[in-house]
Image 1: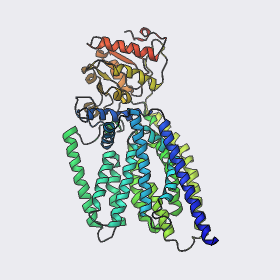
Image 2: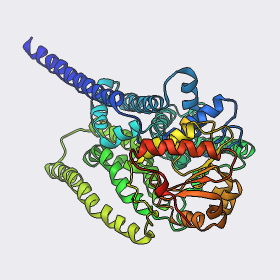
Image 3: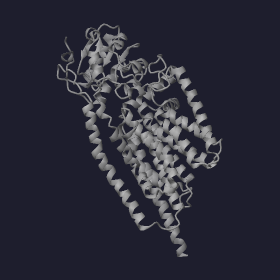
Image 4: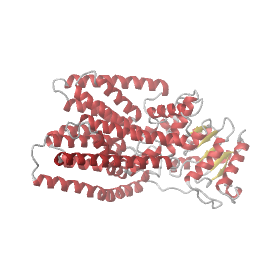
Length: 548
């Protein structure tokens, strides 16, 4: 009797411990999400600006009433935010944070369901509690995962869609039918629609699974059907985007190309080596499982999951990872490491007939400890080296003129100050600025000229032109970030800028220019003076005007 009861007690104890670990991790995660301040990721507010314009009947336009603009990378996330904006009365910050963190949890749930559904060992198959106890505490204690859950960006939607793609692909492998391909085609397309840089996963991962994991007699037929179906969907997608936007790729694609901006001093900020190691820190526990339990006879599983991951991660070294903090572009690869680890762990125990040789066990344990030790050491060595190289390749930042010795202000205080002007600007105003995320969302009716070209097709394709900017006669120019050395130099050198604008070169960190004789200039000048006083109490405005 006692012999029977002991295993039961042990099983109950394990289940209770697993439940407590899951509950604590989820409680901590939700507590962080609910108590965190507004997103520090200014770019996330671009999604709510587009959502407001869609709900206002303007379509996918950056400026209300303006041309349809493919200015946001993730069309699917725009649709998600738009739908939730219509269904709820959440403010922008709460909506973005709640959506991002909720989708992050959803991605983990899909990974748990995938591991429990497609493992075969008695102890692991169908054991959702066990997989949740492995995945959830490891992931929700990860700094980068929590960071991206808070940003309000499309990162977590990409993680979720990759998790779904893996699930439906493994289901297709299990069923081996042409009908099972259709969910795979749909998930591949939605992953691509979430982020175009998921194209390798969308096209290669299911294809590799078909070639290496399905019945050899059906592989070629399934592969041809998959590629024909996905190709047809992508062709239709391309045609629709051409018809609506005039281009099939997001405008930010141009900005991320190496050398797109003349004399760009911000290269050193986007350290692709550091961002890769940020991601590897999250994936490291699962990499250790792969080291400890992968077998040569299961090489096909590693190839299916890790070759697309390696190609995708390598591709990010070919672009400038602007706003790629904490491995933002890399993190969507996480599900491929998680599920590969789960399947290798499962197959190891499924095929275990006798205990491995002592030498093999010791070797694998040593390899796991080496990985745990070497990844941080490699990060500390290689990331600074790469940063030094980027610094050498970047032109020096040129500090704005500062005739009145105006002190710098916190970035978000500067944004809040300029938001006062933007929200209250007269109808028909046109502003130019590079820091327009939160500000643009809070003032959706304000027309904004984007000098970076992320939301302006002409600037994206033809590069920035001060002549084009000044021909549009913006009422206010909040000068581009000081990293855009060439852009700032071109504006400041333009004769029309010098003649037509009052310029406060150090105001709100980057400098503010107000058109002298526009019909809205008096009101905008009044709003600017008020915002200046709010941001710089007890400092007079006039001494900070550049006199020529």
